[in-house]
Length: 314
Ligand SMILES: Nc1nc2c(ncn2[C@@H]2O[C@H](COP(=O)(O)OP(=O)(O)O)[C@@H](O)[C@H]2O)c(=O)[nH]1
Ligand SMILES: [Mg+2]
Image (tube, rainbow, N blue to C red):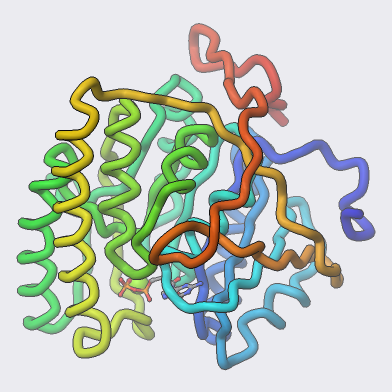
């Protein structure tokens, strides 16, 4: 049952997943900014923080989040990995529009206005790109990280040529597209975005990039020494699988509308609802994918971007 104060609240039309591991320090400011912005959007919005076995009080921050106009829930995963966390979060959503952003809110949240307009107009995948000429980035990364990122981009471009920046942590989707793409996602770590976008494109969903204002917030969870090798290995595997996949089914777009049931409610506290992730995903993610198929997830878009059917404009 939803927590006190959130009963009889209509379901959200936008669900935003925030992957967070050891983010007790950055999350309060990030969530405050996101809640504040989400409350101004023309569609009812909810936030789902996915904590993967943090060693700090990340979960407690979410559990203690005060009730407000934007509900904040917690999903807990046993195993680390940003890809795993985002996948679990996306598969736990039900809204017609979904997305994810990093706990540090490095991407200026004013971009959400553009995202909602584009999604409502029928664009199935809307992603922030720091590589567009209209983007403003404040990058304090080390030279070695910047060089690694450039090499990673070259590889990623072979897999998703339409994306100029696969690694900006600010991506939004039509819900059914995201859930269908996430279902078979195998990349557990930081390179998962490449696979997610490749899967969306393979389903026939066009990518729309938007310029962003992005600043590098201190306290990054990406470590060049600990995470780079895995990211390169993963992007290599994604490339090999995408080549094999396109040979196996050259016919192209398949777009099943898949909406998964919410994971079991584990408890609730103050303004947040707490879920535990069910065993997720094949291969790299361990265990069979959860999920029962198809609940109608389509959204009718009227001229001018007004929304019909299952989407309540607030
Ligand atoms: N749940 C979860 N989130 C993660 C994990 N690894 C990274 N993240 C989150 O992914 C986001 C990555 O952003 P950040 O650490 O700022 O990296 P950067 O901006 O690329 O340097 C943050 O919200 C992290 O907390 C993980 O293993 N599990
Ligand atoms: Mg960051």
